[in-house]
Length: 399
Image (cartoon, rainbow, N blue to C red; front, side, top):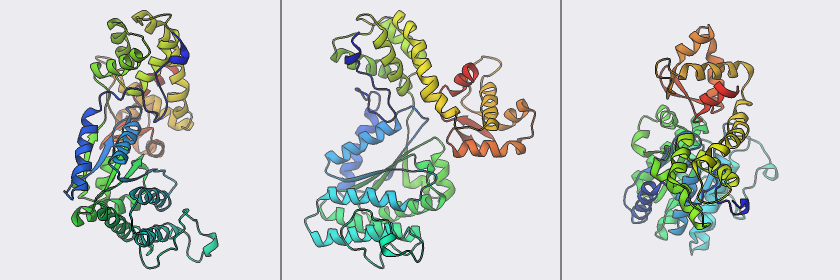
């Protein structure tokens, strides 16, 4: 098969040629856009799931839908070492520009509020020329969104931005990837601002994406957070959707997959979207002709697995210290149940400690570090799980 015409795209956050299995979320979001624009109450949306299930791809697709509805949109990626003010200011700057509000003076006022909000991130006593400039020409507005209390400031900021959007009969969408990495103060402020926007009926919503423990992060910050957001669990594709993700792009290139090949692909990928693209690309390059056969999948699978072992699994494993790697390996062993030899979704921390011959308390530093690095998450009290699908299998076979 011609590698130049290979239609599959195994990139981080890269949209596949066919966004299969996500019609329900896309349709539901179209309804949200229309309801918010009409002044109807609607909750913000959170996409939660493991790595490799396509959360970022779907987040970008939802943002594209908002752009088509002429909303103002801005996107940011949360990082553990970065506070919210600067990236959010940049995102809202773009959102306000996209609104194309006809009153220039009102737009300049809101841009000045955004600037004041961003520059409040600087230390007290910092000279004006040394403050970070978000690229806004309007002068900073004193006394608005610049108190230094992120919760007060964020409510004031989004109130002004939401009022601007309401003037033109559209909405503003703030799209946040890796939302579980926001700091506790920023999470609390974001929840409070969403609560205020809902009570005021302003057309501002947050669309976030994060790991499975994101709901717990929000709940620990604000007890009412579960009523602020609508959670959409993004999981692996079912067999028919996985087949669609493979066959439609191939058909556009004049190629086909045999039924046996599709069954073999589902067996090795388990329907995880990133794996579907990674194996699909490898199989296409190896297959001599169309239709692609199950034998082609067998021949190409080691190549796909080798690439995943380096780029998808290995890069994450390398981020762990020696003690953390021991903990990960122990999790991998415990996750494979002794009876059916089936991978468990989560494992008890006590069993990991038992396998390592240690007390659970002595392993807390390694466990906490892995949680902060996003390699594992706490599924429930006393249990932990990998954030990356098939990571346990990789550790048992390669690490």
